[in-house]
Image 1 (cartoon, one colour):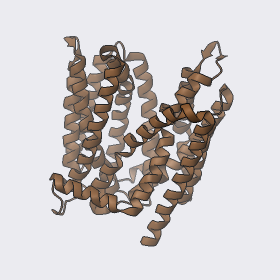
Image 2 (cartoon, helix red, strand yellow):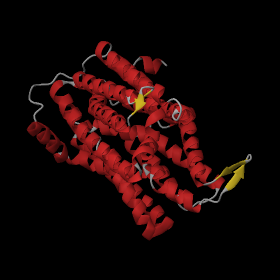
Image 3 (tube, one colour):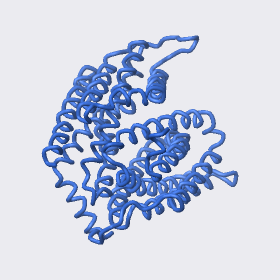
Amino acid sequence: MKDFMNLDRNIRLRIATVFLSVLLSSTIMPNMAIYYARYFGAATTGLLLAVAAGVGLVAGLFGGHLSDAHGRKPIMLWGDGLMAVGLGIAALANSPLGTSPWLTFAGFLLARVGGNLEDPAAQAMMIDVSSSENRRFIYALLYWIMNISVMIGSAIGGWFFRDWLFELMLGMALMAVVTWLVVRFAMSETFVPTGQVTSSLWHMVRSYTQVLADRRFMVFFAGSLAVEVIFNQPMSYLPVHLDRDFRTVTLFGISLYGQRMLSVLTLVNTILIVTTMALMTRLTKKWSTSRAFAFGTLLLGGATGVSFLLNSLWPLVLNAVVQTIGEMIAVPPSQTLRADLMDPEKVGAYSGAWTTVGPLSAMIAGFGVTLSAVIGNGGMAALMGLLVLVAVVLVHKAATWRVVAD
């Protein structure tokens, strides 16, 4: 608690708002694909989700650049404002007055634009008021908080999404309003633009060209992208493998088949992070960022690959424990190193560029599912090993390059 209270006020407030917003969003967002499929069909739903992802990616790039041109706080206010309006529209479209799926999609699309616009500015603000010494603690704490939020929110969504959708959406809209009020009246600006950056499209292109020209950051970007592909496996190939190969077993009178086994592994992951993240942070506190990242990624990627070769309950559960330990060790130093590698004058642009990692890794992971039809479980396990090697080598190179350059 003492370490938390010693953090900058903006960071403490940001962590609090992240907990509430992630809790509410995780009650709804995982189930929206089901909602759209019910009204539009699978083909149209896939197209809508792809459009939303593309629009969100562009919004993230704009948000990063604009936060360098106008400061962090104005962009966060615009983003939170759009989220509040969009979620309000979505709630209205599912109110007792009637249901409009297309208006729901429009509302969530506007909210996604707001969220992706705000995210790089919020990330940049946290980097502005943190230091290399406390970032590892901050990112570990934020990671822990987000997992608690997802665990609680997913449970709420599973019970109430079908019958209380309007109330859940209204709650999300109100939380966006609360977040806007916190940013407006409780947070302070952390970055004063020099005037050399404008909000024009040309300056945005030039800003991101400069990010692309930063070779050490792009080396780190490539290594991190490899890790994110591994992180995407529970949402891409692992469900396919479990559905096809897992041996159904009865535990405490409950039949566990492939889809349920995926939920069990997710539950093991979340519970371990919530209960042992603080311990893992203390145990690895004195490790260098490069060493912690390498060891954690080795455990994470190795266990992910092994999971493709297993098809029974307890070996998969034990493997999930190893996988989660690797995740807890690797994530905070990775985020710390990312912040250290950014140019302090262009943190917004760097944060905006970073928003592309998620969509790119999801696309690559999706191609991996297609490739699995040819290379099978063994080939996918070997691919995870290759990604681990690429990630460790590139991130180590970026970390040591940073030391030499400085």
